[in-house]
Amino acid sequence: MSTDVHNVLIIGSGPAGLTAAIYAARANLDPLVIEGEPSSTSDQPGGQLMLTTDVENFPGFPEGIMGPELMTNFRAQAERFGADIRTEKVSRVDLSNRPHRVWVGDPEAAEPTYRAETIIVSTGAQALMLDVDGESRLLGHGVSTCATCDGFFFRDQDIAVVGGGDSAIEEATFLTRFARTVTIIHRRDELRASKIMRDRAEANEKIKYLWDTVVTKVNGEGSVESISVENVKTGETSDLAISGLFVAIGHRPNTDLFQGQLDLKENGYLITEGKSSRTGVEGVFACGDVQDDYYRQAITAAGSGCMAAIDAERWLEEEH
Ligand code: NAP
Image (cartoon, rainbow, N blue to C red; front, side, top):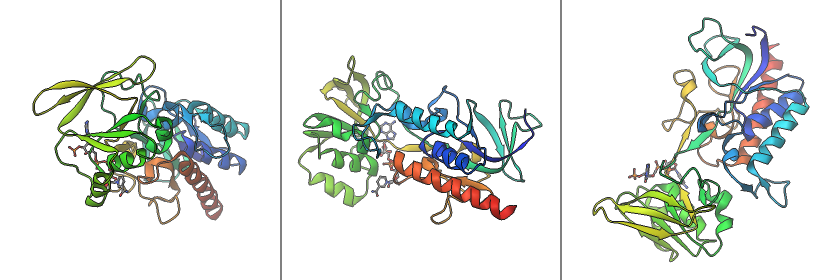
């Protein structure tokens, strides 16, 4: 246990957290990064890019780069400037007094593990998954949760999108730029998506619909070859030959630690003030997908991580 007060403690190690670490380290703030433990998707060190394959839209890599390799580079760059990165999972925070207090391990322990003047929250979000056989095995090999990232790989192919909300319809519409056909698979017979999005999709000849249908299995050895589906009204089952399955049933921000302590939007995402990374609590900043329910890109997360480090640095200057 360390009772030293750190200048900057960063929770989370995706593009946002590690960019914040690079900037804070280069500002001589000796940041401590609690990167999470590789035991669950919500604490995945390196964030969501660790679950993808090729990343072709991150500037600076004209040939593309594998997601895990990109995050290894981020981490090495942060460490090069002295960021202290620990493979631990935060179990509790107390942001009610300064310095702020952070626990790893036993959340009931009387003393916190760390104290910090500023906290940068970059705990990310996770795409909700179907939790069916074959889905996690083929994630990054035909199963995707990001059309912007992976649509390009499905040129002239038959693919499917699961979900009936705005995300699913937006992704399906976007994917028709590449794919030959996009089948929207929805568990009901009516879309949840807004009228304007529905109208746009209905006017698109490449989009087909499978109503009242759920995916029960993703089939394929090294990559997706087909999916098994079931009509929830008739019980009828069949296989659909596709090479890509985009799961667009919503995201969940990793904000459990901050319930009751930081202001959250109705959908659970952290609220930041204006264009800054400031939360409603002094000395606490947020960046990346945990506060972004709109762009959700690695590059925007990285940009917001830079903002959080600069905001923290300026806040520390003003306080001391
Ligand atoms: P959402 O609105 O919660 O929709 C999720 C969809 O996935 C619903 O159709 C739901 O079915 C379905 N679903 C949920 N769990 C499922 C499961 N286990 N198996 C099969 N289907 C499942 O999520 P979203 O589409 O990601 O949108 C989130 C928010 O962002 C919304 O407020 C949306 O308006 C907003 N958004 C806006 C835009 C835009 O304006 N351009 C774009 C994207 C998102 P049911 O309908 O049966 O519940």
